[in-house]
Length: 305
Image (cartoon, rainbow, N blue to C red; front, side):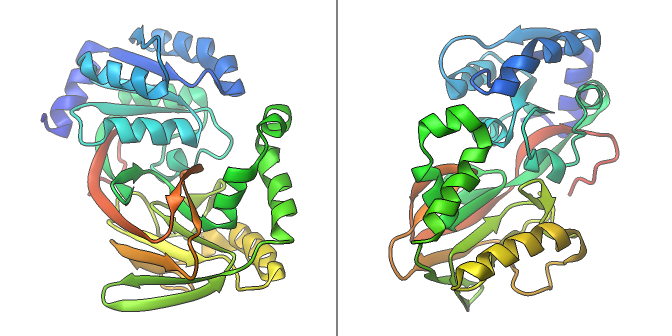
């Protein structure tokens, strides 16, 4: 495994990159050609990983000896890329083409396409933490409760017609009959109990495009567990709105956040789990941390611990 400085120098010297864009996403299809042309204009020789699904294309890029794999897409695409590239001698370049771009925000990647491309050309390799849902790496969050039920229930036809709006529409329908969970999080010899419709465990500082707290990021060796409201449906709606409006003013020391590097999550009945927006099993679940598991190209001056 090369050092981060050696990998940075190899990327700058070779100016070779493999571009992988999720063309199944509408914005990915629209921006693929534009992203490629801007990378070429920045001096990169671009290879395209063709054939197979997204994971297969990413693995082919790594197996082909790429120094830099550029992933263009939203949080789902970036999360898939992070899983494949974790603990590998390759850097992930981010072109944030999604709606919320939580991971890009967390690690300080510019959301403007031109500036993001300049970061790939002139930036530096750093390493950041990934969360672990069991043994599955994740970039952003784990959701237990209503959000996971929404992911399982949103009709495919509705998603094709209205895109991401399918999720709040589905949530509104489910909330009327969703029963709150009793959730226990065990960590550091302590027991935290919540009675709520929704619990998140986040790796990093953003959710739904908004800050969770002012002092959380993806290189701090911490996960953040927190419920959204109590057992009433009104509390869930109120706290969702409050979190979006005040996250930038809150800190990890505030209630109800639990900051830790590992926890065991269990519920009073088996509850579905979503990992970075994809359904993945049910509770109980061990959630851990993989420190410095992923190398990314970041702007010069980005903190690197």
